[in-house]
Amino acid sequence: MKTWFKTLLVGAAVLGAAPLAAQDVPLSVEVRLDAGIPTGDADDVLDRGVGFGARALLELAPTFAIYGGYSRMEFDVDEDLGEGDVEEDGFELGGRLTLGYGHGSTQPYLLLGALFHEDETGLEAGLGADYPVSWNLSVTPEVRYRTIEDLDYLTLGIGLRFRP
Image (cartoon, rainbow, N blue to C red; front, side, top):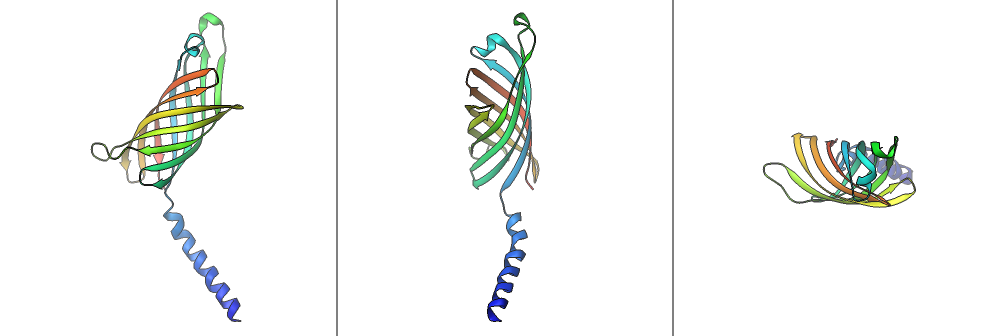
């Protein structure tokens, strides 16, 4: 009988503590709109593009977070070379390092990550800032350089980051 009571007590404690622990998880979600600017050899073939993305961030320390997400970018083929478009989409995984606090509550950050797009692997590096507009919502302008196989491009984007 004592073992059953201890099991019940531990179970109640775990279930009671679960909602409290969930509130303390430093998780945020971000959605983005990006403009793509081809660079290098891709600039000769592709026009500017547009894309979107979503990512989740898990803060492991006050200045470091890991992120994972999905992004999609679509470029038009240069008019002189014909018609069509090039789509680039897939998953991304990386780290985000906050560079301290900027003026006021602005937080600049660096990104470095791996891209897993359409059976190809690439890299991304970026610079952005977190501008809080409320206690759980931020606007995040960001510039990233991405390279995947023969496609190199810059993204200029804006995002909304939500912290539950």
